[in-house]
Image 1 (cartoon, helix red, strand yellow):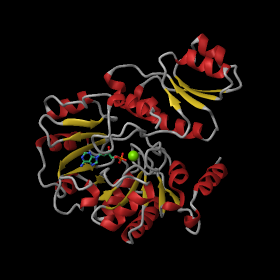
Image 2 (spheres, rainbow, N blue to C red):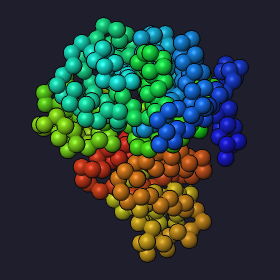
Image 3 (cartoon, rainbow, N blue to C red):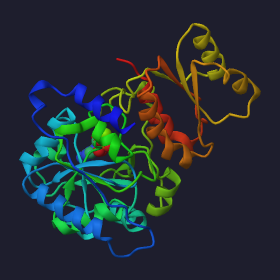
Length: 366
Ligand code: AMP
Ligand code: MG
């Protein structure tokens, strides 16, 4: 498996990049019960600080997805993030902080909603957008007047930010538009020798990107649904919070990072209303299909399971479990030369909105 992944990334390397070696992967899993870092983590953090201070790019674990980090105050280092990802310069980055004090130091104004959200949920999977202070370079915010800030709930990431003594700009550690990485190997497969170091802190527990909340408007507005529900945010701010007006099928490239196609595997993905019927028809037509379904006890699903050309991936029926497993499943299926990935349409309720958002964008073909 590891060999196949390495070969895959070599094949995709441009000739000009071949001279660069693949980045070291430093494994430093931090047992939940341990307050102090294990020796491997101390060593990994030291190496990462060194790499960051000479403007290098370090992939770091967080509880949402792996991030590709550079020192947020260093324009040149941040420019290297955009190059490594192939990310349009119009799509601003989230700046990761060690605590609320560091966040406040980066904001021109710290709205009450940001304070309420950060106090209640940080470290955690929620990003606040606030007026930008003067220390944040233009390149981080895509020239805009606001900055997105988050304190990640992963001990390696937080220790690293504290040890570096500076906030880190870090988008997801994958090539632009692709599926975000939830393991160190996903990072290697997507970015390979475009980056300098990977810290392996184990698989991400949340598995989808943070909830992004614009705290400069009143009421605050959710720009990107994520692991944190609207109800939880409303309880924290003590009032209503707006959702994006439309679900992604109707979203245009109006706001940065909200382009319709995003989070997409290389294999075409569909979310049909009648997944069973669609899978049966495609298999009949001779296609090789991967199918994400929670209905593995359904007799119709079991009948289809006998087909040689069908890979059924049983998915958790609860939204947290589904989200945690989703990207790793898409990465794995992408390695299998399938014609198509079919996903059961998730329930049409609010709790599943972030997952529906990612899947709908993954299904858009350009
Ligand atoms: P990524 O880190 O790749 O998951 O993407 C970061 C997300 O945060 C994108 O959807 C960006 O559009 C969003 N974002 C970052 N900075 C801002 C900002 N200043 N205002 C609004 N959205 C932002
Ligand atoms: Mg991303």
